[in-house]
Amino acid sequence: MTRSNIALEPVLQSVAVIPVLIIDDVATAVPLARALVAGGLKVLEITLRTEAALEATKAIIDQVEGAITGLGTVLNAGQMKQAETIGAAFMVSPGGSPALLDAADDCSVPLLPGAATAGEAMTLLERGYGLQKFFPAEQAGGVPYLKSLSSPLAGIRFCPTGGVSPDNAGSYLSLPNVICVGGSWVAPADAVKSGDWARIEDLARTAAALKKGAAT
Ligand code: 3PG
Image: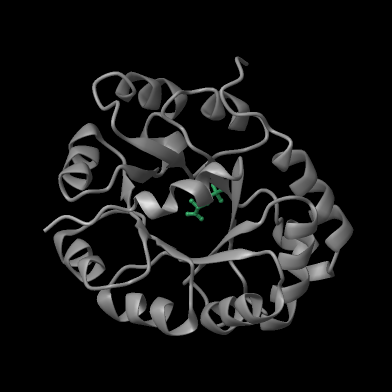
């Protein structure tokens, strides 16, 4: 069975950068998300890596106007059910195991699965996934690797994530097979901890101004 995630195209197309958020304290979730949205980054990924992640995601979904909120680090069917239950707009996985893709076939929330090699990307494409996360982007070969996939795998567009930074984001975004990038740099842990929402809004504004398809 194949399941297209083409429904995600307008969501990913609408932004240059998706903040990847690791939220330890539920109390920071809503002000953090408001700062990012105010800076122009409205598509948010909250990783399921902390005790607070689900409650934090639900709080953002319920309280942050304009945010399009997804769950990241989704690794199994149970977590897909949680994403469905809280009303997540999308799910992100670091890879795409057969069991995970089977579970996604039965889930109403669109999935952005990860690939790090041509073979993994082809496996996902065979299952219907024309939109994929390239992860871990820098460690897997970075811009030159992804560029070399653009001609043979022209039917796939990627969201590179992992080691993406203000220094290299523009190079990724200039590639024809990159729809947007993901990264944690727009929400530094120290700024979140100290509640420096103005700094986060500034970082978001700079990231939101990055252009796609521009030569760097
Ligand atoms: C992650 O796994 O945490 C994401 O890919 C974000 O990576 P980054 O912290 O390198 O941006």
